[in-house]
Image (cartoon, rainbow, N blue to C red; front, side):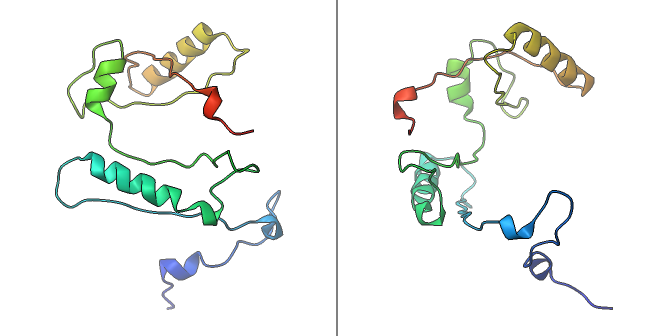
Length: 143
């Protein structure tokens, strides 16, 4: 029996199948991981992650113009204190809630979408606590 390392298993592109064509693949992704073993949250970890993210530009982390990023970001634990300050509704204790981001098409009825989303959440045993419109700053977007 041959044992294949998980690292070897993913070192080649899959064969062409359906709409997938390996000749169209492009490799430019970068990944950085920043963690702490101290067991406490800290803004220093976020700052280090942002530095790592900025240093990935050479791996393609920009759009077609130099002012546009590729949508990369950082994944962190929920910033509970911040969320409580902006939510506009009461949140349960830390660790007893989750947050999601939903992009709603401008042409769609927002109320209809929210009702459909909340119904789907209930079917999955979840409860939507509230909604928040995230402020945007178009002046910082690229061309």
